Length: 99
Image (tube, rainbow, N blue to C red; front, side):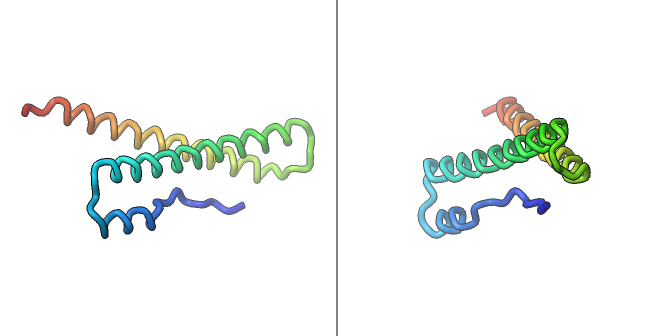
């Protein structure tokens, strides 16, 4: 079972850096990155759920695969929540700044 890292779409970033980066392009690039990252977290959760169901139904699934998938899903969700918390904290700090 391979553990794939959440990776940034480098092609879109390097492409954006060569041309004039407009707010629209930056927003789209960030939006796509965020969607991909959340989809990867969701996929890990779904895989963990599927393996757990198979194990509960008595299908031929290795216990260590179920536990690894469960921990992977848990860690990716925790990391996502920490990133969200930092983003919210940064937003709140920016909103407290006096102009």
